[in-house]
Image 1 (cartoon, one colour):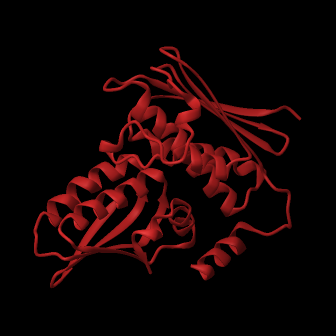
Image 2 (spheres, each protein chain N blue to C red):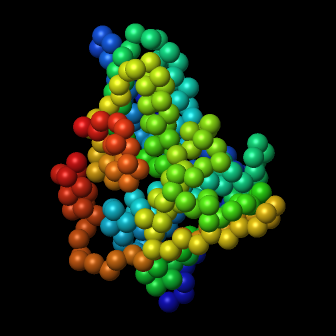
Length: 157
Length: 101
């Protein structure tokens, strides 16, 4: 079977954060993920795109490209910007580290991505840009319909 | 993102509906801070019943309001967080400083 993919290119406007995570989630739906898996993907994408919106271009608007590929049961999402780059990637990935505390950034973005995805790779070069690669295997499960899961998750709430 | 304010004496409840991300948190911050400028409120309740999505920017928003309220010795509380939202709250460790009901 041919591998499926979609590319999305957006200006780094914060209003696009909700669109991109919803678009990626919709694209992944062909793998029949659980509600939980979809939430995890949405949240991780939101973190990566928000990082690019907040940090890549300082006060200017640049472009962000989101590539999403399905390889077997693995979803690979690449969030790339062409901005300032991350000075110290290792430091940026530390929990609670933020360069912008005054903007109420919690510094949890990478921690969230790491706990929700199987793999998080960050490639960055100063004044060239940053590429965040997220990978997650979608479980092959129990033929449970989406509706049953929605019922379950609302019961637990 | 939709915000409703409910006042009961010195308690201000903010009901958040929709998705709390970086984009909506900025708008929410302006609205909520304008309201809680009023020093009569000694308690802020954040009701997350209608919240479908939160990420770390949403956590940043909650911590930001905690700081504003704490400055004047007030308290803050989170209520009605659903399962999905609760997962992020727990991950952040925010429960150590804010009462989650």
